[in-house]
Length: 208
Image 1 (cartoon, rainbow, N blue to C red):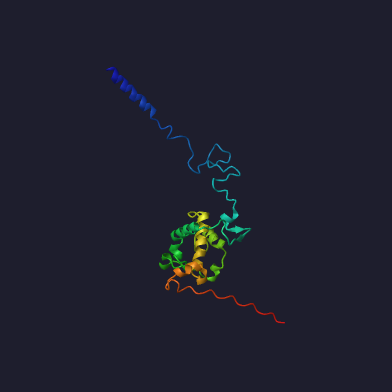
Image 2: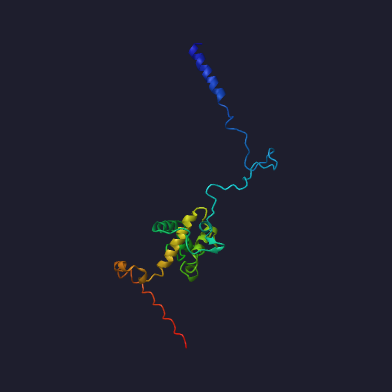
């Protein structure tokens, strides 16, 4: 054989001996298999006491529960800006509209196809409910509604709750709720449903 052929043959042999499965078949436990190494015979090891997963500390009670000392709060845990409301509208349209419809009357496409109708957001019970109620329902579910906490962040749940409150206001608005400088922008058709707010009743005179 020529020297070059010997060298090529040696290189092939060396490369083949290096192609082993040791890295691919390392000793390991299959999930939930018993272990002879640990005293409790569990291959799945418990978390170290006091361990908190990254992003799971959640010390802000208002933000993550919607409550203070077990009572639902009526104000969001952070200031709601126009951008927050727009984000809340977007998340509402994605996650809530199929059942609650775009105006919150509970006549979404899911309900129209024979499933249970959710209550309208515009009934007195929900109009008077604290804002934390809507956050709590999205977080833990209520009745036939499953929670959405696995796909909607706590911050976005608050934004959706704020947008729901805006929907409620929109259905009970009066012309007095429109800033004076903007009232002229309302045409006859769009302003037809806006009525002046009722004047407060005069206080009754004390009987002498």
